[in-house]
Structures are given as structure tokens and as C-alpha cells.
Image 1: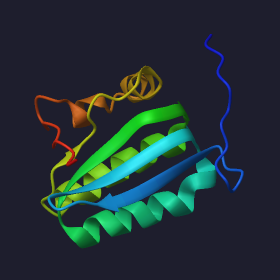
Image 2: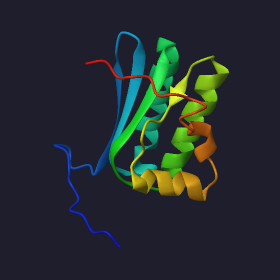
Image 3: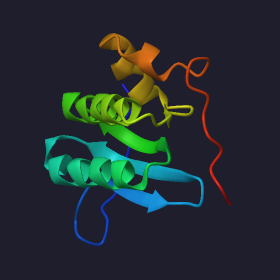
Image 4: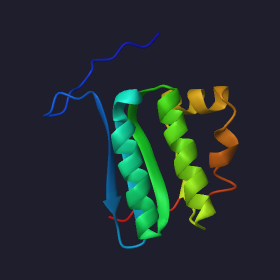
Length: 122
């Protein structure tokens, strides 16, 4: 079992979901502990990404914990995005995310071969 220090942002939160629009992509960045407390942020990120109608990159590189709520967000972003004709990618998820999506059998949605990652812009 890996133990890590929990980091807090300036509002005392231990996790978050942020949306950033770039010239060719919409980047949804997740950090820290992804759980039910972020339901509102996840809905806002999905709405923002769909409004922009650009390829969506989900960055989970800073996620330290993810429960079923986080997986539901990933699946919703993928489902709504692809229904709208958008490419949705999850490049190089960390082990904590990879393990959960593999365990639940949804890793195939984000297979790099089927959905190549869109390079983030500098």
C-alpha cells in the first residue's frame, strides 16, 4: 500500500477538475482525490468541453485517488464527447487511474490505439 501526503489547494480541497481551452483542444485536468465532492466541477467541465466542440484531452497525471464517481465522469465525458463527434483521449493515466478503469472494464474506451492522444499545446 502506498501512502502519500494529501495536498490541499487554497480553498482546502483535496482534489479538483479544471477546464482549459487551447487553440485546438479542450483540456480537462484532474488532480488529487477525485470523488463525489467534485460532482459539480465534473458537470461544469463536461459542459465547457462540449460547448467548445474541440478534441478533448483528459489529464489525470496528478490524480492520487479515484472512486466510482471519477470513473463515471470519465465515461460521461467520453460518451457525450463522442456522441458530439469529438475525439476524447486519456493519455498515460497514472497507475491509480489505470487500475480502476481496468478493474471496471472501461479501459478499452481510452485505448491509445483507438483514440490517440492529442498533443497538448505549449
